[in-house]
Image (cartoon, rainbow, N blue to C red):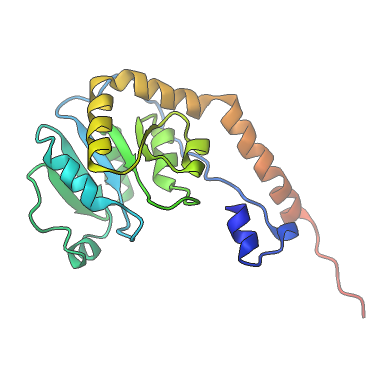
Length: 209
């Protein structure tokens, strides 16, 4: 991200990159949620999100539920609501409490992009909730979310990853919780935040007349 910003002309001396800090969802449980496996797919329906591949992967797994959040009207405008399998639901935007409830009952959160340099906030939310994450295998996301089950966004890879996580939820959840609670991740964020805190607390110099 820093390199991309500098290439766009941002002065590197004025540039500080701060990754998202995972929100707190309170107590988390390492055991699998009750009921049918449920995969949550937070979306904005931008061009880098492989939503059609998610739908086709879901078609191969009729015993699993897929909840795709985000603006339903935008999804409809892209023709994504046509010929849906019965196990796929486009929820529209959800109130925060409803979204948190959905994340709590998720078997995994799918955090997908076809572009490198994109930091997905949904992955940070999943880490905060202690949920398994199925995440695109970009260089940036692999560096930030090493506990993830990485995929190349293909239908086959999404199918296999969902099966893997559903069959071994406790293992993948434990990996996410270790990532969330580990000192390395928290210390990295504090180190990133330190120069920004100094910058914000520095009194600006008045220009000379």
